[in-house]
Length: 334
Image (cartoon, rainbow, N blue to C red):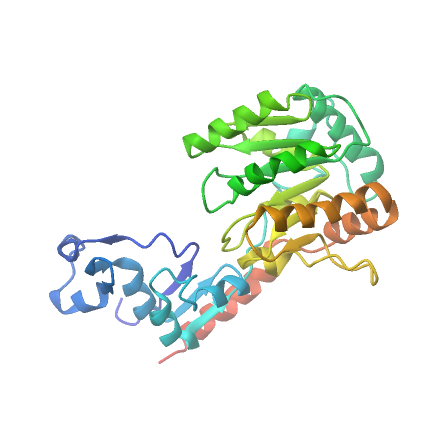
């Protein structure tokens, strides 16, 4: 393998393979490589770090969005590895993930073929999506109200995903004429929060604790708005799924969310959703408020948002071409 090339793909820099320096002796490499794995941490001193060695030795490094590639070079976003990343900047490239359009496609989605749900496309959006919305409301025992906006959150319940910001914003959300559906599992206190909100606002909030692929598909199809208030998000897929299904995203503009969701401009009628620039409940409610205003009062603008989301090419085709360029560059590098 002397001339083999390696390409490292960074999915989430927070997970690094850290441990005491002695862990090096478990990886079965000659001692001359020890320094590659050693990283100094101001808190605990020298430690063993697999990611550090990978960044130093890879021929090329790819990460899953342009925005995240930029964030990794900052002290806040690099999780202690930003200096190594800046030093190796020349071999870095951000490539936004694609989605599996066989699995996530409202036209062929297998989870929309029973219980009152229906497959739909851009042509049948006006009849298909309302049917899915009614079926979702029925399945979750929410009041069957076709005009009320259904807001969804789908994701892991932890600090990264910003679900606690929805918790902070809940008094405002509950005061609006909306329905909110949250699906996810994770930190026990956040799971309890979901259950508590369902109890407290039973006529408008549903908290599904656990994870169900079927429900993730059905919520994406039946909801009008997807909330993604992540504190950091290397790429994010749920916003891509949402746009494919004509569901409008409201996101914190970080990492891949900033790359893939362009802010709606009512004057030019461009953009795919709403973004907010700080992980704060006030910023979230401001963006969501503007989104709801458009939903309630500007029907043709809302249809334009849905249409632009659904007509994008979010498949792997584009990403695959760029991955091929990176692999060829690594192959011919000396």
